[in-house]
Length: 449
Length: 63
Image 1 (cartoon, chains in turn blue, red):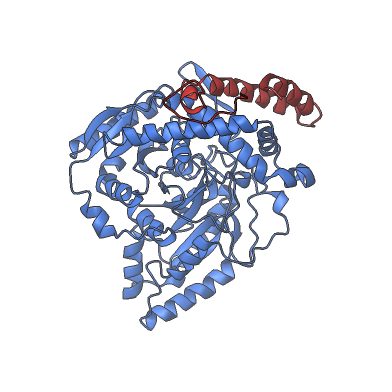
Image 2 (image 1 turned 90 degrees about the vertical axis):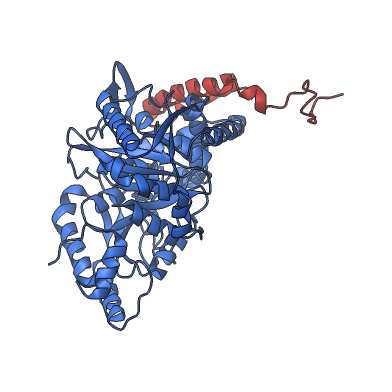
């Protein structure tokens, strides 16, 4: 049996084309890793074993006849289990969804299949994507592959773990407050939240519709770019976006608020990343987002009522089926006044302008993805310095602003602290996700260290 | 209903739920967060200001 190649997807597809190995062999390797590791890690809710083998066989036969379906031909990809796959349950990791069967593929799934991808299975998540730890799930908690007693981050917990442990070549997740970038950082992989509305959410169980983003979790930035181009409406060519970045890059660090509460070791690791970027030609400037400290309250008054609205009927009919902590926060959303929701939307406009203004002084914003190392499973709070804060608040602190404003953001792995991965986040201009990806590609080696 | 009355109402309502302690705790957090929202200095920039001649906004004040 082959090892899952540690190369970008484009190289794997080329090797498949050359007959170096087959899609069936690739799929069998991923399935055997699932059998070996998933009883511990709990990354998958549904594994599509028989269908996957049939599709891989068909992909190999097509390849033998010279037919390449697309840039993901024969590549096994996992999905967060809130994306519909025809004929398969979309559980959202909730007992509330028991008995569900999707009648058609989500738009994103159709696009992946059209590019030749093979859907290997549906991944565990924080119930209804409403949480950042991956612990509250009807399928049980997902564990971090780097330390089984730690959280993998969420809510796209299983997606990140499936990629980090070689159970899938890439995955698709969703990000409402950081749910792609947080687990990507905690598991040591790449996670991209595109610009808001660039990737269709049709066929995806909503959490908060004005905040929900769909995006890829991958091993490399090149893979994230390939998947982004496959699932998004963006038609910018990779070549043109790379050409646009052959210039000196300015990285803007928003020091106030974001660095007020940060684990000392994580902060030290970030400063090392900054020095590596400077050493490889990047220019560092300080930028300010004056009302960044209002992010959490604006987010709360947006996300809670939108989520409560999505679950209003189910909370009446299937209340006892929810995980208790998720249910309680959904119920909390029912207590936000409409006028406060509207006020929060005005606050979003202020924040969006301020992020736009900050990006006029630099090409990308640069900050850590998480201010802390992945906490132990079951932790409600983490102490940073002398301040004890909720795990939820801390894990969202660096990411949720860009869900409110819709700016594209990517988390890249940037080494290890105490054996645990840390991530660095780059944020770009709205509707310039490809340019952000090109900047990330150019500095990926420096950031990884 | 004014915001303060609403807080009293929701606390009474939350008392009827079986997850009362957790919900009450979160309601206190929400109340503190709402106070921050109301205190935000950008609020005056985005609310209708009848006395601001530069904004030329229609108001709902009764003549």
